[in-house]
Length: 449
Image (cartoon, rainbow, N blue to C red; front, side, top):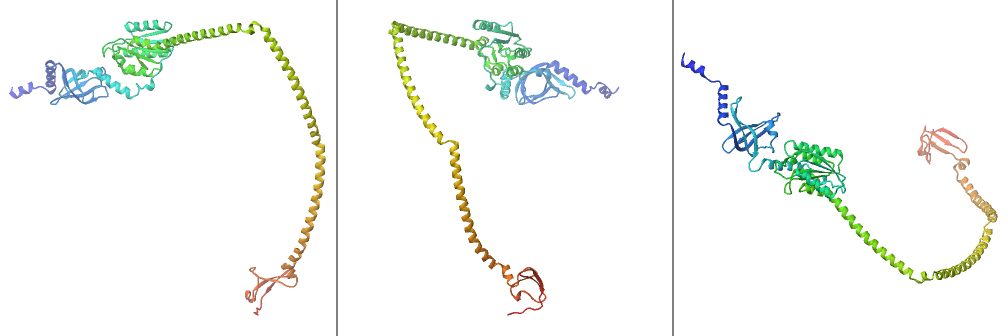
């Protein structure tokens, strides 16, 4: 066997070599933490993300699959400095070495804080934190809904405050986990269930903890559920220094769960204080009025009228007699005056009787008719005297009268009047109008004077 045959039999295929390199890298390097800058970030339709991790001298291909990507607390993007851990391996199909990312976090800023800031900016731009959407708390809530853990200290604190300040209120607790991966969906379910039940106000929250512990109240689904709820919501997450995105979307933010319970019943306390103040004022006013009228009664009882009431009746009787006599006098005077006015009206009515007015009108009508006839005859005679001379003058000037004396009118065929021999010539046909009748003639000869 030749050396060349031996070499050919012992040669590795590309796949075999690549697999050996892969095994060496995975066993020799294994899982590592590596820092760098993300570039060429792209997400495939399947939900996996491919990117390059680089520094100022080298670059490394990287991939993070959909399941791991969905659990990140921030959204990676190009240009972001990150620290990631994963398995260094070789992508056999291309022979490239790469790192399969299991988790990453931003450098300098924690992943949760970065996710908090990014989501806050996004939801704020959508208007979820706008003051225009804030609802006022009811003055006297009858049913208060609470979404929190049934075993935490927060619910006990809230129940103690509500029982001390407003014992008659009906409290409904929706038990929900407030920490962990399932907490956000349970909080949303609690909000929706109590809204459908019809409570007057809602409290969501929990006691203090780290940003990671409080994270369910920063989940986008929880913030949107708070914003979309039609019932006023008080958010009480953590301690006074803690802020969650639910605080910004809620209608009111309480620094602690106990403070939330105080806020939802403070209007009740204010109303009770106001009623007590009004009751005290009313009592003082009533005491003053009783004293005032008691004093008046005492003065009245000691007056002359109460000691000798017959004097009051005697004076009133005398005044009544005087008023009756004055009334009789006035009635007599008005009766006489009315009788005079009635007599005058009777005389006036007689003068204005319709029969007499009709008779006088008939006399005036007869007189006017006679005057009208006389005027009409006079006018006709005057017009006739003027008309006859004008008729005679018109007859004298009438062309028919002139024609009747032997004259005639000669017109050409076009209707123009013939005034001189220049207007016609031999063989012209003319129409002659006579005093009675007309004739047509043919011109045989014309002569000029």
